[in-house]
Structures are given as structure tokens and as C-alpha cells.
Image (cartoon, rainbow, N blue to C red):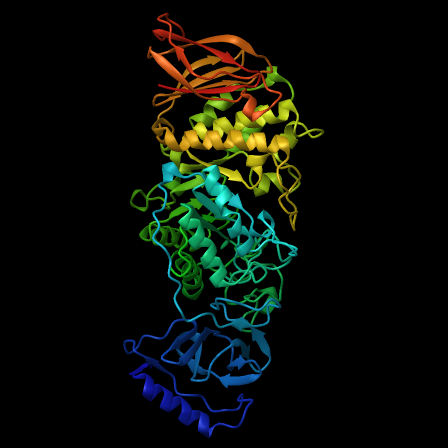
Length: 606
């Protein structure tokens, strides 16, 4: 029974129990009376450590433990058993660091602690002063320009072996200048392995990776991003945790018979494991409470703006097959929570499962968008050497893709951490492994970028893509190098392309009409609103290439990938305006003549 009493009474009760206890260590002390100051009777305090009016209350779920204590850096505070397998204790003494001890020997970190020591042995008490965030308006789904960023390798301060929240924050103005308005952070919650690893082996869901920085530094990073007009998403990994047996949640309360992983995970059977580690038990309310609490923390305490949910196919199912008990329910609740706070929620599923982006009312999961196979389709067309073999139809299908009739229900990319990592490579390297800065590598990867930023959907870059970065993405990844001279030219191209995407209303909406499709020449022309996009997938230049358009008058050249500012060895491109000719072409009443570079792209607007 949780008593509703004032802070003074709570302190008196606690001190009375302490007076009767033996001197430190206090593992043999009688249980301190537990009370909850200032909440309704019958309502327990939150899990973790909560400080109110100078009194810190600890609460933990450990249903298989006979005894529990809080280790306060060598001094033990006995916890009192409570209903539903929980334990609680209080202290009026200042708390610096703590961990739990079950049955006098089994030590574990608090799953709800907000900060841990670098050696992963202790939880640290965080600042009691709330962070004051500046106001921020999140970009709408159809306006998002996403940048996947890995804190450990994006930017490194002098004398540091890897990146931190602070070093990444210093480089945020460069992303704002490029036109980025959403950052998708690769996992930053505490994970195992290298101090700057990928992060897809989570240990805890509330504390940031200590090598990246403190919670206050993460808040400062997000706040500075907001000042620059950039939203921040978290890559949330709830389909598995680290497969290390000593990971904080593994065998949490000391009970894990027959090879089981303990109370936070499914027991032995088909749902117990993923290829990367144990799967959380989504049918256990205490587990889903923790996972959803972490999401709420990102949206409220940290002021984040949304999520990329890793491997949804292993939450709702087993690699997309069948149904994982409770998986759908936790995903629906997570999406509802995100949308209640004005955020966006993106599924990485890669199974083409349209139900993910249907609304809950329509029987779906309620995701705003999902990672799409678009990038693989575009790579399959543009990577091979032979121009004759390029499937122009695959480009058209990629352009017109979507889920449930919604092209913006897709997050699109041509590079991401999985395609560059896992034995993969950057797109220019895939095109020309001997020279990723060759004409073909640059021009065909730039063609892919034009398709990316002019398709209905949410375009995403992987860090360094905009500057022609080379090399793979291993674990731990190498630091992102400064751009070469060619890389700076390519960056100018991406900046111009992103500027078009953000300024042209036709590129922010879902309508797309193919006006010209010439498989022999490998040229396709499509229209979005009053924006025309011309793509030439052959290594052949045209001083004049004609195609039909529905409207006459003057068309303005907004981008030509053949411009010298994008490559000093390019053909020069065209600028200014083009007058439509009143002559039927492609079933349209007008004809537009354009200059078209080899592997070139031209964007025109009215």
C-alpha cells in the first residue's frame, strides 16, 4: 500500500528506520518504510531513481529476487518488497551514483537511469535543473530532408579519438547551410562494444553512450539543431538487445534458467532470439512500459522529434513472417505517442508491407513512412557498366512507388549505413571501384541523387554522401574525412538540388506524370506540378534533345548537372530559359529542346 504523506513525514519515517539500523554497510538494516510524497494513494512512484523534496526514491522490478538493495557507492540501502515483483527504498542523503544488488551478490544497473559511468558499472544522478529548450517547429513529412548521422565518426574534436555530441554540434551549421532539416541519429543510447560503434547492440534505453557525452550535452546538441531549423530523430532499437550475457538487462534479477535471458525477454522458444541478440518480451507490461517510457523520454526530456524504428520486421514478426506476440501493440502505441508529441515515426522493415503506413483506424500500424527498397532499385540500374542494360522501367517504377497510394509514405535513400557498411560501399565506389571520382562515378551517382530528390517521398543522405566521401563504414567507423576538390564540387550540386526540393512546391507533393520514355536513348522525362525533370542514363551528350510538354511558353533552367560549378571537367551545361515550340511531340501539344549532357540531368520550372 502506497501511503500519501507529506515530505516531512516521509523523511521522519525514513530516518527513524535508519536510526534503528546497523552502521554502514546497511545490507542488514530492516526495511525502511516506503511512502510516496505528493501522489494519489495506491499509485507507486516511477521506476528508477526519483528525487522529490530532497528525498530520493528507488524502485525496481525484480520478480525472481528474494532480496534487493541499492548500492550507494559501497553503502547498501535495503529495499522493501512491493506488489507485482517490485522493490523500493528511499534516502534523504545526496545520491551521486548507484546500482542494484539482488540476493546480496547479483549486481545490475538501473534500467531507468539517465546516465552511466564510462566503465558501465554505475548509474549517475543527473542534473535536477530542467533544461530550457528554445521553441521549434518540426518540418512536415513532405518537407523533410533527412541526413543519417553517426555521432562517433561525423566530426572529431582535436585530441579526441572519436566524435561526441559536442563535436557534432560544432558542425551542425554546415548541415543547415546544405539545406538539411532533419537529422536521423544512429543509435546513441548506451550500447556495448566500441566507444564509437554502430550502436545496434543496446544495453540501456534511457542513458546515452558515455563516450558520446552526457544527457546535458545531448540536449544541447538537439537544442542547437533546433536553433538552426533541424529536427532530430533517434534510431530506436527495440527489436533486440546486446547478445552479451553480462549486458545490463540480461538475467536482470539473477533468474535465467535453461539458457533463458531473464525477465525482460521472451523465454525459450521461437520468439526468444533475433540474429543479433535476445528479443524483448512485448507481452510483459513492465517491458513495454520501459520501451515506451524511453520513447517518451526522447520526445519530452530530450526534446527530440521522432524515430527511425530498427528492424520492425523483427518486432511485428520473425523477419517478416508470422506474428510476434505483443509486437504490433507496442508499435501502435509507440506511433500514437510520437504523433501526440508532433513527431514522425519511420519503420525500417524492408518487406514492402503496406499495413505499416496505414492508420490505426484503418487497421494499420500508424507509421508515417517506412524505409523503402527504392535505393536498391536505383543502384541496380545505375551501378552496372553497360548502358544498353539499364532498365528505364525500373527507374519509372521507383519514381511511382509508394504505399496505399501515398508516395510520401516512403523514406528514400541511395546510401545508408547498411549499404555502405556490412561489406558494402559508397555508390560512386560501386560504380567505379578503381576511381570513385571518375566522370562516370560522379555523374551516375549524381543521376541517382536527382531521382532521390525529385521523387515523391522523404529523401535521406548518409553522412559524407554529399561530399563524395569514399571508403566503407566498418565498426568502428573511420572518421569522416574532409572533402576533396571534386567532393566540394559535388557538394555544390547537392546544395543546389536540396534547394530546389525545398523551394519548388511541385516537388513537395505526390503527383508524378511521365511525359517521355525512350528506352533506346535511355532518356526519361517526368513532371511534378510545374517542375520538369530530364534524365539521360547514357554516356552520350546531345546538343539538342526534344520531348513533348503539355504547356507552352518559357521554361527556366533551374539545375543542369553538366554545369562547370559541379565539375570542372564537365561540359558546361545550360542556364537561362528555353522557349517551348508549338509542335506535337510525345502526344503533347508543345516541344521543348534542351541540351543534355552525358549521364546528365536537367530540371526546369515554369
